[in-house]
Length: 326
Length: 254
Ligand SMILES: Nc1ncnc2c1ncn2[C@@H]1O[C@H](COP(=O)(O)OP(=O)(O)OP(=O)(O)O)[C@@H](O)[C@H]1O
Ligand SMILES: [Mg+2]
Figure 1 (spheres, rainbow over the protein chains, first blue to last red):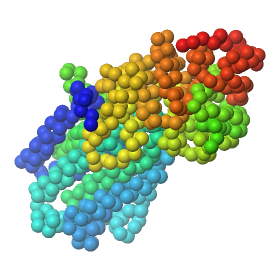
Figure 2 (cartoon, each protein chain N blue to C red):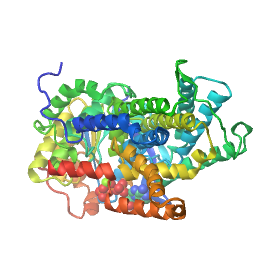
Figure 3 (cartoon, chains in turn green, red):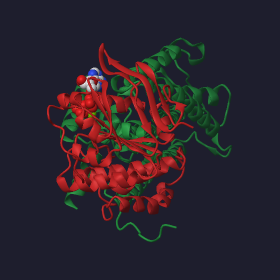
Figure 4 (tube, protein in one colour):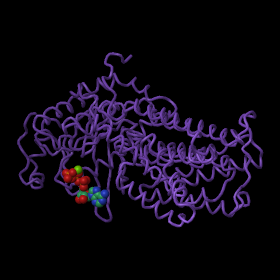
């Protein structure tokens, strides 16, 4: 019905072909990566990359800085571990349970925190995540400091055993790519369009009749669900669920990953996550064990330099430069 | 059914002890253009924010089309057909002009939480969005980012976006502020056209425009209603002249 005037060019706000190209290159690189790098390390890194991408959906595309996302990542890891180990569920069901759990939790946390703005919003998410942490520390189900260990990876769909690291990696890669595509779809959906309008000018969106809190709640739930998928996958990869993934430093780390890579870009958080994961590995290689005491200092210095040099993050800066030279 | 589109009684707003709007009983007749004027800081914008529920009143009631909206939320009254613009032009700066108008159309045709569908389906609103833009003289600006448009065009875009809601009543807060002379004439004409078949309540400092557009004028000073009537009556009122210190001009035509 609207063929009369085709829009002449893609709008400046959406360089879609470049995005798909970046996605294809990333997928291809990751597909061959196990030739050069340990699949176990890669699989773990991809879990964090998906976590960062999920977090970016909230902070980058909805403008909500949650400081409690470890709750969803770590909490879902416990659910997946419990399902796979104690209830002997197959991996796909364990992951669905982890995702659903985190999504539902996210809707609840979102409902409580979204009534407040800015730093107060962040503080409520942090406080709720800390409550989750202490619950995980105390509850018998989660086994305190020990966590849940020896989680079986099981057989995917009852057919493919995931005990081999390589098989596990490709399964995680598939999950990761599906997660990225899901995020891409969410961002470029009617819902995403509304979300963007809300982030651009909230009062204007309200005056147009948008129930902005409901949109933010849904965005929070979706982001939490995907973070939960990442956490569940990590539990299967590492065959454990521990307090570390629930700790507030994990919430901080994911913020760092997204800032480093580039907030509000598709591939930025992924690059940021891989970068954060790779630094300790590389430093270990170079310096050996006696280097490790300096690790945090060197890591910190690298982060500071990166954030100062690339204000928009690695990918954000790259994209901005590419646009300028076009 | 009442003859008033909007009716307030005892409307009061206090900010930490300071009374910005005090016991205002405002009645806006359906299908009229009603002007709300007054010196800076008189409480006009606060009044607007109360009427559109962006602020909660300290006291008083607001009836819109006979329905009590004293406790409704801002998005809710917008969905009831009470649409507003802002004193500072409000657009979505990083969306194109067309996407700005589409944002309103998308909401009006049912809020969509469809996060699993492609946003290509939003193209179904393009024809209507273009038509609305054409009505305010924005043909050719469709693909421009709203933030990069000149101020006068932004105001026109804001009007097109507001009209996309097909509102029953328009509340315009200083729609002509900051515009150049030729833009003033154009936007005033647009408002006059938009007012056909609707009720308009507008705050405006440009008294020439107020004189030529408004059927009824309410003068607000220090949060209180000082006078009400048509332009001739209001401008002849000594109390109003006092408040405006000779600012009132002869009625002129735009
Ligand atoms: N959020 C607030 N907190 C405290 N005081 C406020 C607040 N908003 C407005 N005021 C005060 O209320 C009074 C009325 O302000 P308002 O913006 O409604 O005036 P106005 O008539 O719209 O003025 P102008 O013509 O300059 O736009 C002013 O004295 C202002 O300082
Ligand atoms: Mg004002």
